[in-house]
Length: 434
Image (tube, rainbow, N blue to C red; front, side, top):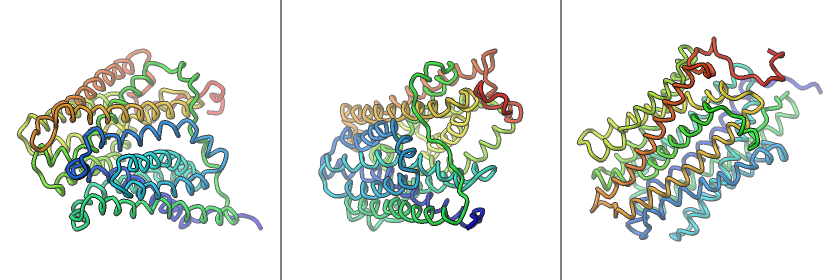
């Protein structure tokens, strides 16, 4: 029987199922932030103990990042989505199983170990279902739904107030229940693609990113400026979001519900503004300048939170704007700096260094909070951690400036040009195909 083209309804169904798995994944990652205060107050966890719940995730991500592409090539993306989705779902219940830190760390390690292959595999399968102009939009929808998982976690103390009133354990059980979407999405997608492949023509997808360290020595300074900016940016944003709910409650005396709403501003801004920023940059260019402006905006945020007597929504909104501006420009810019055949190595290396930075700095901030005795009784103890975030902002600002200077000079790669006038780097052996 001759296979038919995939109907639009089936493509969007596949996208929705895959995105629900991402929703559960993002919710699980952010859920522990909203029990941090209880874990420290009731179970005696230190700030460093709490930070390990995030750093162990990044450590697991670093470990699996080196061979996740090989797993997808060997077993197929749909199998990886199935297995990784189930492990993600299990990880939430392991984290909630007991009050023992070691068991919680195992749960978070399982989440990090399965989340990276799940994200990569979903990107691969979406390229099977959506081709041409639809792919970019489909990836945008997928990311929007995934970030909605973070938004739901941020607002969980509000919409699940009765559950949080029962304590940290019930809140983590709730996270585990929502995390079941990872497993359900993995199983349903596996069945859907298996059946669809019998009747419809599916694309071959795209080859997962591979890490080839030898290629990294051939990258230009602009690439390394972007990598360092990426590492410093995410090493501030992700750890801050993890500590923010406890910080807002202890240092500013707000309710747990308001703390989550404040934290959600970063996600709301990125969900709503990122697509429009991408369109703007395509039209006007100035990618390096945009990254520099984003670095300037984030610079005073953390110091305003500890020294300025202003509405908390102001610095948090500034953080949200920066979080929309920098990533929306940073990741696509790599395609203009690195030649096509080395993009896999470039993105894998960039993600690897990002995760190493997050793992190290989230632990460092937790340790600094402990050494400074940060608590509701000693709000100034949070100053040291905020200065660490600010220092990361300064380093990011320096390297974003170096990137701008390079890209406006003779060694530029066209980042400052509109998309119509700047083309991604083509490998030497592919130039004739243009």
